Image (cartoon, rainbow, N blue to C red; front, side, top):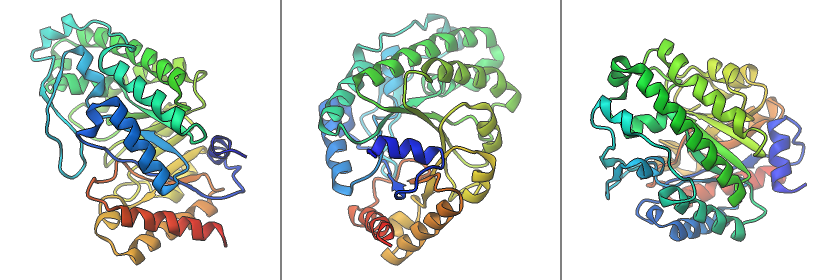
Length: 331
Protein backbone atom coordinates (compact mmCIF):
# COMPACT_ATOMS: atom_id res chain seq x y z
CA UNK A 1 0.00 0.00 0.00
CA UNK A 2 1.12 3.60 -0.52
CA UNK A 3 2.31 5.83 2.33
CA UNK A 4 -0.97 7.66 2.81
CA UNK A 5 -2.95 4.43 2.97
CA UNK A 6 -0.45 2.98 5.43
CA UNK A 7 -0.73 6.08 7.60
CA UNK A 8 -4.52 5.87 7.66
CA UNK A 9 -4.32 2.16 8.49
CA UNK A 10 -1.98 3.00 11.35
CA UNK A 11 -4.49 5.42 12.82
CA UNK A 12 -7.04 2.57 12.79
CA UNK A 13 -4.66 0.02 14.35
CA UNK A 14 -4.54 -1.98 11.11
CA UNK A 15 -0.92 -1.45 10.11
CA UNK A 16 0.71 -4.85 9.84
CA UNK A 17 3.47 -3.70 7.47
CA UNK A 18 5.98 -1.52 9.32
CA UNK A 19 6.26 1.19 11.99
CA UNK A 20 6.06 4.79 10.75
CA UNK A 21 8.00 7.81 11.94
CA UNK A 22 8.45 11.51 11.36
CA UNK A 23 9.57 14.69 13.03
CA UNK A 24 9.34 18.36 12.26
CA UNK A 25 11.11 21.60 12.97
CA UNK A 26 11.12 25.30 12.23
CA UNK A 27 13.38 26.77 9.55
CA UNK A 28 13.88 30.34 10.82
CA UNK A 29 14.64 33.08 8.29
CA UNK A 30 14.05 30.61 5.46
CA UNK A 31 10.40 30.35 6.49
CA UNK A 32 9.68 33.95 5.46
CA UNK A 33 9.83 33.01 1.76
CA UNK A 34 7.32 30.39 0.50
CA UNK A 35 9.57 28.93 -2.18
CA UNK A 36 12.60 28.71 0.10
CA UNK A 37 10.36 27.14 2.76
CA UNK A 38 9.14 24.55 0.26
CA UNK A 39 12.67 23.75 -0.89
CA UNK A 40 14.03 23.22 2.64
CA UNK A 41 11.07 20.98 3.52
CA UNK A 42 11.62 18.83 0.45
CA UNK A 43 15.36 18.52 1.14
CA UNK A 44 14.86 17.73 4.85
CA UNK A 45 12.17 15.10 4.33
CA UNK A 46 13.97 13.44 1.43
CA UNK A 47 17.20 13.24 3.40
CA UNK A 48 15.71 11.37 6.34
CA UNK A 49 13.03 9.40 4.45
CA UNK A 50 10.20 10.20 6.85
CA UNK A 51 6.74 8.67 6.43
CA UNK A 52 4.81 11.89 7.05
CA UNK A 53 5.47 15.59 6.59
CA UNK A 54 4.25 18.37 8.81
CA UNK A 55 4.56 21.63 6.89
CA UNK A 56 5.88 24.17 9.39
CA UNK A 57 5.60 27.85 8.45
CA UNK A 58 6.74 30.45 10.96
CA UNK A 59 4.44 30.39 13.96
CA UNK A 60 2.91 33.84 13.42
CA UNK A 61 1.79 33.28 9.84
CA UNK A 62 -1.97 33.21 10.72
CA UNK A 63 -1.98 36.73 12.22
CA UNK A 64 0.01 38.77 9.70
CA UNK A 65 -2.99 39.45 7.48
CA UNK A 66 -4.93 40.78 10.47
CA UNK A 67 -2.24 43.44 10.93
CA UNK A 68 0.40 41.91 13.22
CA UNK A 69 4.05 42.64 12.45
CA UNK A 70 6.41 39.71 12.87
CA UNK A 71 9.84 40.23 14.43
CA UNK A 72 12.93 39.44 12.40
CA UNK A 73 14.60 37.46 15.19
CA UNK A 74 13.66 34.01 16.49
CA UNK A 75 14.09 31.72 19.47
CA UNK A 76 17.60 30.18 19.29
CA UNK A 77 16.32 26.82 20.56
CA UNK A 78 12.93 26.28 18.97
CA UNK A 79 13.28 28.59 15.97
CA UNK A 80 9.87 30.06 16.74
CA UNK A 81 8.96 33.68 16.08
CA UNK A 82 7.13 36.45 17.92
CA UNK A 83 5.34 39.63 16.98
CA UNK A 84 7.08 42.99 17.14
CA UNK A 85 3.63 44.56 17.11
CA UNK A 86 0.27 42.91 17.71
CA UNK A 87 -2.82 44.14 15.91
CA UNK A 88 -4.76 44.17 19.20
CA UNK A 89 -3.41 46.66 21.74
CA UNK A 90 -6.64 47.30 23.66
CA UNK A 91 -9.86 45.35 24.07
CA UNK A 92 -11.71 47.80 21.83
CA UNK A 93 -9.41 46.88 18.94
CA UNK A 94 -11.34 43.62 18.66
CA UNK A 95 -14.15 45.66 17.10
CA UNK A 96 -11.93 46.27 14.06
CA UNK A 97 -11.16 42.63 13.26
CA UNK A 98 -12.37 41.76 9.76
CA UNK A 99 -12.22 38.59 7.71
CA UNK A 100 -9.09 37.96 5.64
CA UNK A 101 -8.68 36.30 2.24
CA UNK A 102 -6.94 32.91 2.51
CA UNK A 103 -5.67 33.22 -1.04
CA UNK A 104 -3.89 36.51 -0.53
CA UNK A 105 -1.17 38.00 1.68
CA UNK A 106 0.69 35.79 4.15
CA UNK A 107 -1.85 32.99 3.93
CA UNK A 108 -1.53 33.01 0.17
CA UNK A 109 2.24 32.61 0.53
CA UNK A 110 1.73 29.43 2.55
CA UNK A 111 -0.51 28.01 -0.15
CA UNK A 112 2.28 28.55 -2.66
CA UNK A 113 4.63 26.60 -0.39
CA UNK A 114 2.15 23.73 -0.18
CA UNK A 115 1.76 23.65 -3.94
CA UNK A 116 5.51 23.53 -4.50
CA UNK A 117 6.05 20.81 -1.89
CA UNK A 118 3.21 18.71 -3.30
CA UNK A 119 4.70 18.78 -6.78
CA UNK A 120 8.08 17.63 -5.47
CA UNK A 121 6.85 15.02 -2.97
CA UNK A 122 3.55 13.82 -4.33
CA UNK A 123 3.66 10.38 -2.67
CA UNK A 124 4.54 11.58 0.84
CA UNK A 125 1.54 12.33 3.12
CA UNK A 126 1.62 16.00 4.04
CA UNK A 127 -0.26 17.85 6.78
CA UNK A 128 -0.53 21.62 6.96
CA UNK A 129 -0.21 23.36 10.30
CA UNK A 130 -3.24 25.16 11.71
CA UNK A 131 -3.81 26.77 15.10
CA UNK A 132 -7.05 26.77 17.04
CA UNK A 133 -9.08 30.00 16.77
CA UNK A 134 -8.36 30.91 20.39
CA UNK A 135 -4.66 30.25 19.85
CA UNK A 136 -4.70 32.56 16.83
CA UNK A 137 -6.46 35.17 18.96
CA UNK A 138 -3.76 34.84 21.64
CA UNK A 139 -1.11 35.58 19.00
CA UNK A 140 -3.02 38.74 18.06
CA UNK A 141 -3.60 39.90 21.64
CA UNK A 142 -1.07 39.41 24.43
CA UNK A 143 -3.74 40.45 26.95
CA UNK A 144 -6.37 38.07 25.65
CA UNK A 145 -7.28 36.46 28.98
CA UNK A 146 -7.95 39.77 30.74
CA UNK A 147 -9.73 41.14 27.68
CA UNK A 148 -12.06 38.15 27.62
CA UNK A 149 -13.18 39.09 31.12
CA UNK A 150 -13.78 42.67 30.00
CA UNK A 151 -15.74 42.11 26.79
CA UNK A 152 -16.46 38.40 26.32
CA UNK A 153 -19.16 38.82 23.67
CA UNK A 154 -16.98 41.07 21.53
CA UNK A 155 -14.19 38.52 21.51
CA UNK A 156 -16.63 35.64 20.87
CA UNK A 157 -17.86 37.52 17.81
CA UNK A 158 -14.27 37.90 16.57
CA UNK A 159 -13.62 34.21 17.20
CA UNK A 160 -16.41 33.38 14.76
CA UNK A 161 -14.63 35.52 12.15
CA UNK A 162 -11.26 33.88 12.86
CA UNK A 163 -12.81 30.40 12.79
CA UNK A 164 -14.40 30.96 9.40
CA UNK A 165 -11.08 32.28 8.05
CA UNK A 166 -9.25 29.19 9.31
CA UNK A 167 -11.87 26.94 7.71
CA UNK A 168 -11.36 28.63 4.35
CA UNK A 169 -7.57 28.44 4.68
CA UNK A 170 -7.80 24.75 5.64
CA UNK A 171 -9.89 24.00 2.55
CA UNK A 172 -7.47 25.98 0.39
CA UNK A 173 -4.55 24.04 1.88
CA UNK A 174 -6.19 20.76 0.88
CA UNK A 175 -6.84 22.09 -2.62
CA UNK A 176 -3.17 23.14 -2.82
CA UNK A 177 -1.99 19.59 -2.09
CA UNK A 178 -2.05 18.93 1.66
CA UNK A 179 -3.45 15.49 2.50
CA UNK A 180 -4.17 16.27 6.13
CA UNK A 181 -4.15 18.96 8.77
CA UNK A 182 -2.15 19.39 11.97
CA UNK A 183 -4.34 21.35 14.35
CA UNK A 184 -2.59 22.78 17.42
CA UNK A 185 -4.23 23.92 20.65
CA UNK A 186 -2.48 25.23 23.74
CA UNK A 187 -5.65 25.54 25.81
CA UNK A 188 -5.98 21.97 27.02
CA UNK A 189 -3.27 22.76 29.56
CA UNK A 190 -3.42 24.69 32.79
CA UNK A 191 -3.23 28.39 31.92
CA UNK A 192 -4.59 31.66 33.25
CA UNK A 193 -7.81 30.94 31.38
CA UNK A 194 -10.03 28.73 33.59
CA UNK A 195 -11.38 25.51 32.09
CA UNK A 196 -14.91 26.89 32.31
CA UNK A 197 -13.83 29.67 29.94
CA UNK A 198 -12.03 27.22 27.66
CA UNK A 199 -15.35 25.40 27.30
CA UNK A 200 -16.86 28.67 26.05
CA UNK A 201 -14.06 30.19 24.00
CA UNK A 202 -12.04 27.23 22.69
CA UNK A 203 -14.05 24.02 22.48
CA UNK A 204 -17.10 25.23 20.46
CA UNK A 205 -14.90 26.92 17.88
CA UNK A 206 -12.60 23.92 17.60
CA UNK A 207 -15.60 21.66 17.11
CA UNK A 208 -16.99 23.91 14.41
CA UNK A 209 -13.63 24.04 12.66
CA UNK A 210 -13.19 20.26 12.75
CA UNK A 211 -16.76 19.55 11.62
CA UNK A 212 -16.43 21.87 8.62
CA UNK A 213 -13.16 20.38 7.37
CA UNK A 214 -13.59 16.74 8.42
CA UNK A 215 -15.02 15.64 5.10
CA UNK A 216 -12.56 17.68 3.04
CA UNK A 217 -9.33 16.13 4.28
CA UNK A 218 -7.89 12.64 4.58
CA UNK A 219 -7.04 13.08 8.25
CA UNK A 220 -6.73 15.54 11.12
CA UNK A 221 -4.00 15.30 13.76
CA UNK A 222 -4.56 17.39 16.86
CA UNK A 223 -1.53 18.66 18.78
CA UNK A 224 -2.30 19.06 22.48
CA UNK A 225 0.42 21.49 23.46
CA UNK A 226 2.13 21.88 26.82
CA UNK A 227 2.41 20.09 30.13
CA UNK A 228 -0.27 19.17 32.66
CA UNK A 229 -2.70 18.71 29.80
CA UNK A 230 -6.30 17.57 29.80
CA UNK A 231 -5.60 14.65 27.48
CA UNK A 232 -8.78 12.78 28.37
CA UNK A 233 -10.91 15.81 27.53
CA UNK A 234 -9.13 16.26 24.21
CA UNK A 235 -9.67 12.59 23.42
CA UNK A 236 -13.37 12.75 24.27
CA UNK A 237 -14.27 16.14 22.83
CA UNK A 238 -12.28 16.31 19.60
CA UNK A 239 -13.37 14.28 16.57
CA UNK A 240 -9.90 13.82 15.09
CA UNK A 241 -7.93 10.91 13.65
CA UNK A 242 -4.84 11.16 15.86
CA UNK A 243 -3.45 13.02 18.86
CA UNK A 244 0.06 14.38 19.31
CA UNK A 245 1.34 15.48 22.71
CA UNK A 246 4.54 15.82 24.78
CA UNK A 247 4.51 12.24 26.05
CA UNK A 248 8.15 12.46 27.22
CA UNK A 249 7.39 15.49 29.40
CA UNK A 250 3.88 15.05 30.73
CA UNK A 251 1.03 12.64 31.39
CA UNK A 252 -0.05 10.38 29.82
CA UNK A 253 2.59 7.90 28.73
CA UNK A 254 1.92 6.08 25.48
CA UNK A 255 0.35 2.99 27.07
CA UNK A 256 -2.20 4.99 29.04
CA UNK A 257 -2.88 7.30 26.11
CA UNK A 258 -3.68 4.26 23.98
CA UNK A 259 -6.22 3.08 26.55
CA UNK A 260 -7.91 6.51 26.56
CA UNK A 261 -7.90 7.32 22.84
CA UNK A 262 -8.74 4.50 20.38
CA UNK A 263 -7.28 6.10 17.26
CA UNK A 264 -3.84 7.24 16.10
CA UNK A 265 -1.06 8.51 18.36
CA UNK A 266 1.98 10.58 17.41
CA UNK A 267 4.59 10.45 20.15
CA UNK A 268 7.68 8.67 21.44
CA UNK A 269 10.65 10.91 20.60
CA UNK A 270 12.34 12.75 23.46
CA UNK A 271 13.06 15.84 21.38
CA UNK A 272 14.01 18.25 24.15
CA UNK A 273 16.85 16.26 25.75
CA UNK A 274 17.82 12.89 24.26
CA UNK A 275 17.63 13.98 20.62
CA UNK A 276 19.73 17.08 21.31
CA UNK A 277 22.22 15.99 23.98
CA UNK A 278 22.00 12.20 24.01
CA UNK A 279 24.55 9.79 22.63
CA UNK A 280 23.51 7.46 19.78
CA UNK A 281 22.84 4.63 22.24
CA UNK A 282 20.54 6.90 24.26
CA UNK A 283 18.58 7.82 21.15
CA UNK A 284 18.31 4.20 20.05
CA UNK A 285 17.08 3.19 23.50
CA UNK A 286 14.42 5.92 23.43
CA UNK A 287 13.15 4.85 20.00
CA UNK A 288 13.21 1.11 20.68
CA UNK A 289 11.19 1.59 23.86
CA UNK A 290 8.59 3.60 21.93
CA UNK A 291 8.47 0.94 19.20
CA UNK A 292 7.84 -1.70 21.85
CA UNK A 293 4.94 0.32 23.22
CA UNK A 294 3.58 0.73 19.71
CA UNK A 295 3.54 -3.02 19.15
CA UNK A 296 1.71 -3.50 22.43
CA UNK A 297 -1.01 -1.09 21.28
CA UNK A 298 -1.89 -2.41 17.80
CA UNK A 299 0.82 -0.35 16.11
CA UNK A 300 -1.32 2.80 16.28
CA UNK A 301 1.73 4.89 17.08
CA UNK A 302 3.63 7.03 14.58
CA UNK A 303 7.03 7.65 16.18
CA UNK A 304 7.14 11.44 16.46
CA UNK A 305 8.19 14.31 18.73
CA UNK A 306 5.88 16.04 21.18
CA UNK A 307 6.33 19.32 19.30
CA UNK A 308 8.85 20.91 16.93
CA UNK A 309 12.31 19.58 17.60
CA UNK A 310 14.95 22.13 18.64
CA UNK A 311 16.82 23.62 15.71
CA UNK A 312 19.97 22.68 17.62
CA UNK A 313 19.30 18.96 17.05
CA UNK A 314 21.89 17.63 14.63
CA UNK A 315 21.17 15.79 11.39
CA UNK A 316 23.42 13.02 12.72
CA UNK A 317 21.16 12.46 15.71
CA UNK A 318 18.05 12.59 13.55
CA UNK A 319 19.63 9.98 11.33
CA UNK A 320 20.11 7.69 14.36
CA UNK A 321 16.32 7.62 14.69
CA UNK A 322 15.93 6.87 10.99
CA UNK A 323 18.47 4.05 11.02
CA UNK A 324 17.09 2.55 14.23
CA UNK A 325 13.61 2.29 12.74
CA UNK A 326 14.89 0.94 9.43
CA UNK A 327 16.81 -1.77 11.27
CA UNK A 328 13.76 -2.55 13.40
CA UNK A 329 11.68 -3.03 10.23
CA UNK A 330 14.08 -5.73 9.01
CA UNK A 331 13.71 -7.95 12.04
